[in-house]
Image 1 (cartoon, chains in turn yellow, brown):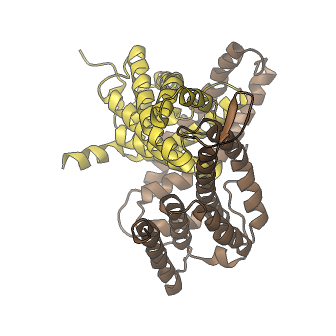
Image 2: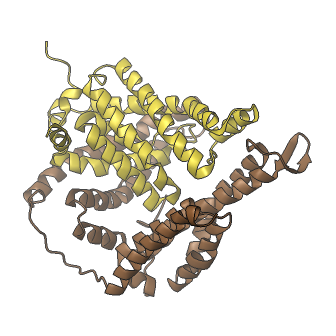
Image 3: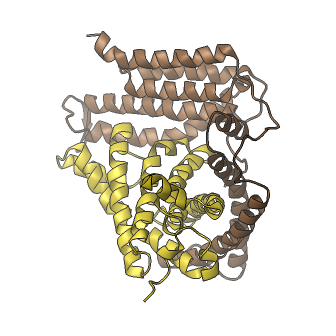
Length: 201
Length: 259
């Protein structure tokens, strides 16, 4: 079956060993960003990295497990958000498959697409579980939009569309910077290294 | 940064002796019932009558309460303020000040949402406080969780504290070389790369060596693997898990059974 083969292809031993490191990168950089008081999350760099060089399925798994680990170690509030992380990983892998990780502007496009997907997927979760309010600054924007008479769903959706792109584009560019910093020999060990290699003439 | 690996606290309690899957099933059941069941006060009852007493049975009562409050109090404060004032469709005004009006529907919605989130977070927290992550993983693996997923979870739990220590070292090293981590936003953004760069590349170098090491130890071989630890599963617990399923069906069915 083509789908099973596509999934299997993503996972060789290097993938399995990379994923814990990628998750750890997510957690630790996410914490450094809080330390530096930057207005972004940057907690999906590892997920995007795995998506790009190991494939969409590996990226999806990385995102999901990353959320679960975050919930296990830091804040159980994170558990219900795993579909968002899943799609971040999947969309990154998908975009890389189409060669968007070969140039910096392709990566910006990827970041943008990931942001849109994240906004779309996180909105129903926020609305259903939390009534649209999470303890972040973006909730003020939601409140303002609610006050102007919009319904809950479109208010939360609009909020997420403002906040996500900056974070996700920065995430994608940082993942790209990491890939560019790795040697060709090292990258070749990963299943989808050709996503990031220049196309042969 | 967290000193402990996870929330787990080692105690000798009946809860600790339960099979991990039982605890997992009970936690999920409580959460699903809280979100799918009827009744404004159902989630609060679940918390007060089931979760809170159970935490004391498990001898983790104090940590349970303290951590729950820490995690949720900011969120709840925010939630109540936002929803009471801005809930769409709120008509009945309770009281007002300046340009703001607190509406009953908003308060009710905030209460329901807050108690549901309370059940969700505290269920997971109780599970995590009373279950050693290694034992939980082992049990899930024996029930069919792929070994690779179990490896990833176990390995991540080990790597994260290592990486946090590395990050702290790099932070100190860069600071002692003049890196400015306070100051303007631009400075702080530029501080990110010298912190993140060494950390990421240092960790990625390990990946190849580790892959070779586990392959050499037969990690990818198929076939059953024997475990050092044995996990107990009593018939009583199996019955309890089926009861949970029944309770869940009842909770969902209550929407149709009661007019």
